[in-house]
Image 1 (spheres, rainbow, N blue to C red):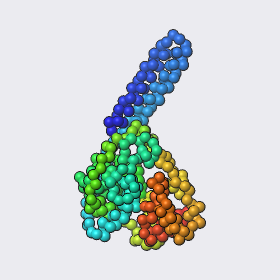
Image 2 (tube, helix red, strand yellow; image 1 turned 60 degrees about the horizontal axis):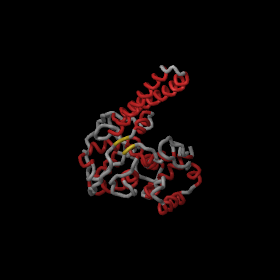
Image 3 (tube, rainbow, N blue to C red; image 1 turned 90 degrees about the vertical axis):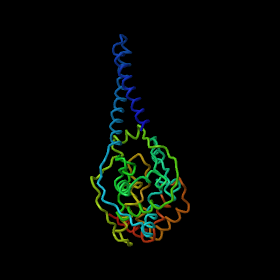
Image 4 (cartoon, rainbow, N blue to C red; image 1 turned 90 degrees about the horizontal axis):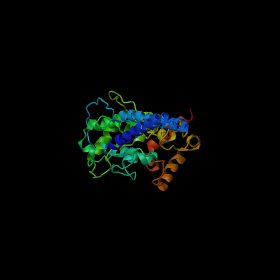
Length: 316
């Protein structure tokens, strides 16, 4: 956070400097200096003062502490639970917490790179026992997965991911069970250090999140090839994150938007839908925005359920 505080001091100093220059200009006996210089310096002083105020507010939002009551968490750690957790992690968590979209979740994805903007050193952390979660309780992990609230009480980038928050309690527990038994990986990512731009975006509400006072249980529908379970898959895979709330490609900044997929969904068959995923998975590159590989990790029932829900969604 030190870099952010230095940036705030610099823009505050610039606001004071241009305010002083405006004062001096208006005292000048020369008309052009008085009016041209005075007005220009005044505008710059107001600009930097506004940036300072917004930056301070955004910093306060990013450092605000939240208290979330988490029920006691019990991890069974059975082979079935760990396997389910690995499956969920492989399709949902690798997008941020792995550089190559493969397990283990040793971290590395940069928010600045994803957004194409200088948001500071904000990296998805190492989620193996070699990272900071080694000192976290199961309740700490449950809290950040469900609400995005870090162990320290501040909001994390997880707070902006509605898909993760849609996971059922059972699936969250499975993910925690998987994380606990993975082999530790030692990494050395930069320490969390947001930029002034990220503070300004937070002040504008682009990274805001509704944090509940306590955690409401989420129960997934029974796994089946139907629209009900398809909706569950659709929500936790966060299709709207790239394709927009109406799947029309309209996504607010700063992250890149995917295409309007409604015409495709209306015209494609289940067999072609599956083939599309599998064929693009084979040809996928690290620069692909669409996470074909993660989508292909859904099993046959989940793919069919997702297809049926997409058909229902675009048919509304």
